[in-house]
Length: 185
Image (cartoon, rainbow, N blue to C red):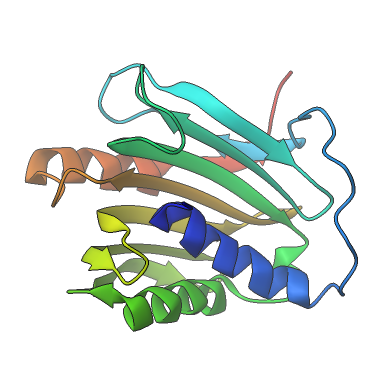
């Protein structure tokens, strides 16, 4: 069963991909990081393991979880993503709104807050108590920003209930201070 984070990311990516046509995706190739991405520090000093790295013509995504967890069974998760050329098809605010509408429709006790917003950047937070498709409650802090190659996404998610105030403050700071630029190899 697809978790809520992947659902919100997928909704946004599908909205952008719909503008590109109805072509079938090519077979999966080995992950090659894009030449541009996030530079950030994990906010809490814990070890985070990359459990999935995918790249297609449309996007690149890396998912991190705590040791011993999987992309299906996790309590906390960090995701970085890039939708290539996304900035030519939608603004970051439009993409965030697609995510909000999808979650608001199906999730109980849904709360949404925009933390900061500009023409090329939006940072938002949402939480809910569970969704119609039996997804557990979840709390996310995410940021979308326009880079040279497209729209980048960085998010921290928790299924442990409401994120404790101190940990929330750390993640808001880390995500807010993250930068997008060339990746050195």
